[in-house]
Length: 125
Image (cartoon, rainbow, N blue to C red; front, top):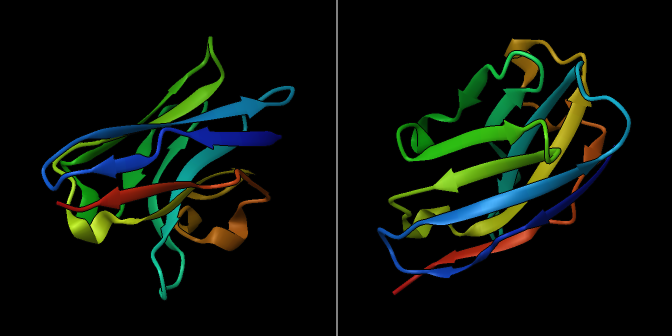
């Protein structure tokens, strides 16, 4: 599976952005798709995940109610709609894909074997 992320940019606090990840491959039924982020000087952290088949989702606590992950089976894309953005959301965002990941391990980057190139999100006035 190959991934290509896009949609980052500069936005003011309280604003919105939509990230998109194009997924290239054969079949994705057993895959979990996720977004991670890495802020300057910090470790990479989990943001959200979605199972391709069931569309079951999971979020880190700090983005619940503000971010929404979704996937489009017809277009083979995974999106992250980010609303009410805060300066602490500033980071490089990466999409990731992994097969056979149990729910409790979805927040572990080591479970994912395909990564996109990252897209920068800057939240600043």
